[in-house]
Length: 284
Image (cartoon, rainbow, N blue to C red; front, side, top):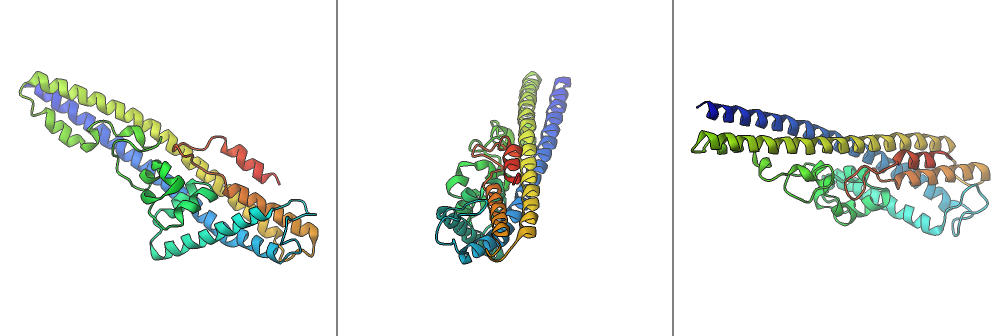
């Protein structure tokens, strides 16, 4: 009887630790998803405002039909066409958000660079249904609320699904308490507790990844806000003042460079050395 009691207590303690760990991990997941969504909103606003304005002024400028020359920076026709495409796709996402069809598109936009995300998210699909580059990163689906099922998830979600442990700690405890012998129940409880320890270690690693993803998203959001303000301060509506126009174009190109930085790579990791990439665009 004492062995049965010990098995029950050991199993229940392990189940409690698992539930607490899972709750903490889910809180980190929600925080990361929220950070990506906030970044996505900033990106969407910049495409609609500053990048759209830049395109409008360039179209009206004397150099609209060719590479901008004679200024502090040049933009090729190819780059202009890419900006136009991204602005149009950002407007599609906005329409999708208004109808509720683009669930998760803002988070996807925050996680990836402007080019990759908009191409994938402009369909208005939910995060878990995104095609293209987004489909290679199931971590984003998990961040958006995907279930912890075996396989398919990136660094933040992958190794957590261990055997049947995600089926529910209560079921596991009930299972080994059905053992015919107390010694067998204690052996099963000990094995279950070891599984929980392994799962908690994976959860801890996942939380480190989530923290890095949040930090990347926040760094990018703040940098984009700063550069957007600088652009607004330098904003002109024509190229009559070559220096002022050139300064605005340079800042606009820097904004585009920041929009192209992905907070998360295709493996679900936080993009490495993102501060260096950001500083390279801010030093204009």
